[in-house]
Figure 1 (cartoon, helix red, strand yellow):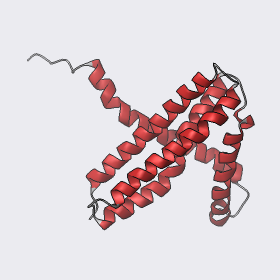
Figure 2 (spheres, one colour):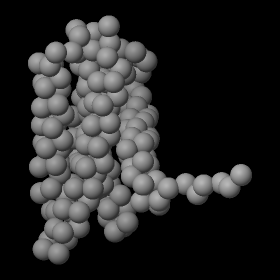
Figure 3 (cartoon, helix red, strand yellow):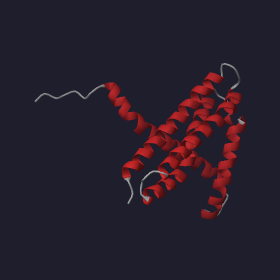
Figure 4 (spheres, helix red, strand yellow):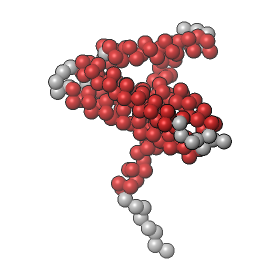
Length: 176
């Protein structure tokens, strides 16, 4: 048996983690711009926020695994964690990419960005070669960025929409 309520709560926490990593990275890099160059700020902030996101994800997963949930729920959580780890890490990365775009700088000069891109390519290249049997790494990387961005934006919207609705106030009541 799989507890859909627990899975839904965990997915909501993943969404909050993506948004938190994105916002924290963006604010920290912007604050770093007061003291240093964009690339230096990104290389200082990204390792910390990526590690924090991974740590938070790991702690949440371990807490679920030692909980009283059913084995099916725990197995589904492990599968979801494996599927969502790269899109989750893309949250902080996308904040750096957006800031570099806005400031008209090339993010590829960032050592951290390049290291993460290489690490992801090392994961995706064998999978791509095994599944598709070709040199489609650039296509797979672009696809990964698109999917990770969509996952992040959708999760952010799902997490933030109820808050926005509460801020806007209750729906007007129709008179009969």
